[in-house]
Every structure is written in C-alpha cells, then in structure tokens.
Length: 280
Ligand SMILES: [Fe+2]
Ligand SMILES: [Fe+2]
Image 1 (cartoon, protein in one colour):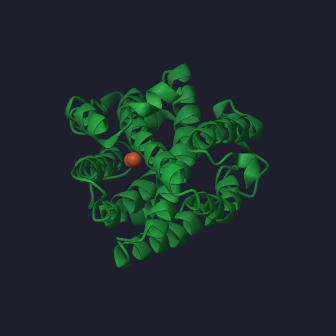
Image 2 (cartoon, rainbow, N blue to C red):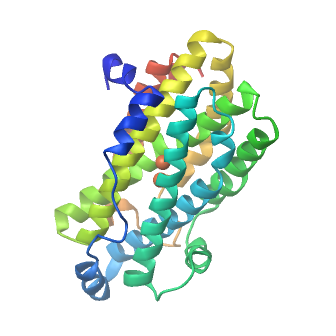
C-alpha cells in the first residue's frame, strides 16, 4: 500500500466505493460445496472446520460489538461510512450462517450455529473476542466522546482483528482451497468478504494515521493496545490444540509462513500510521 492509495481511503471515498460493491450472501451457489464437504476426510477437513468455526464466532462478535463506533463518528462522512461497515459485518455473518445451514450442519438460527462453533475455538481466540473486544466496545458506548476509547477500539478492531488475524486467515485458507479446487462457493463468498474488509482496514489505517498526526500522544494508546493484545494474537494464530502434533501442514503452510505474513502486514500498516512496531 502506498501513501497515495491511503490518501484515497478517507470515509467519503470509502462510502462511494461501498455503493458500487453490493453483493448478496444468498446468491452464491453452495451446491458443489455441500457435495464436497460430505466427501472430505482427514486433517484438512478438521482444519477447515476449525477455521469455519472461528469465522462464524468472529463475525457474530464483530457484528454485534460495533454500533458504539457508529455513535462515536467525527463527521457526517465518517458516520455514513461506519453505517456501511455495520451492514457489511451483518452480511458476512449471514454468509457464514448460510454456509452452516446448507453445508456443515442443518438449518437453524444463527445463535445455534454460533454456540456449536464456539466449542471449536481456542482460549486465546475467546480472550480476544469475548473479553478484550467486548470491553473496548463497552467503553466506547459509555464514552463516545473519548478519543482514547475510540483509538483503542479501532486499533483492536481494524488493525488487529481485521488487519492482522482476518487477512492472515483469508490468505492461507483461500490459498489452500483454491489450489485444491475445494469449496468453490465458500471461496467466492469469502473473497467478497475480503473485498469488504479491505475497505474497513483502509478506514482504520486512515483514522489512526490522521489521529496520531494531529494528537501525537494517541500513538501511546495504539502502542499500549498492541502490547496488551499481541500475545493473544500470536497464540490464536498458532495451530489448534488437538492433542496431536499436527500443525498447518494440512493446509500447506508452516507456522513460520503464517507468522511472517501477519507480522509483515502489521509492520507496513504501523509505518503508515506513524507508530512503527519497533517503538513498542
Ligand atoms: Fe467482516
Ligand atoms: Fe470488517
């Protein structure tokens, strides 16, 4: 990402881009996915199920723990963009729920899919989504005028959850599935979700860069949030603990590849924001 590209990521530009990027989670064909899923066996199936569970739980949290930021807008343009992000996140949750309905399980309400998926996620993942995110969101709802609360929330949500965990999971999961010709409907939907996520991350980087530029002391809030969260992020990018020595080899990646990708992206974004990772 160049500085010129980032310059374009102001909320009004992102809002206009959203208007041209509509898609429906109900128009993607999942029939091939359903027949493939019933045939899949072995380690890659387990690992894909783990990723699907994590995505189902993550999007539920991310959808229902966002409205505080919409209420903390700084301009009408920002309020417009943030409303679109709220809709996008609900759309993503709907896509993963439909995938559960038609491929992984039987039709049910979203809460039932989330409850089942929760059994498969790690403790580090739970800490990030059920404790840290919930707490940062609650603080923002209590104090919508607090720049401190807004910077902490956006660092956690846009920079860490979407920009680091989200992009890394997308890269390795779709890389594997596309290469193997597996779950084409899932890959199509997840790719549309990814396209939405690049707008969201663009907003987060724009907001943090502008804020740190005008209020340099906010850089310390970004740093503190990263210090608090990075150990759990690293743990949740590690292979699921299954009691075996299996790692990501089942999807053709090593833990080193994954860590390198995650850290590389975070480093680039922090440089743009003006809070380099080595100043932590
Ligand atoms: Fe999302
Ligand atoms: Fe998002």
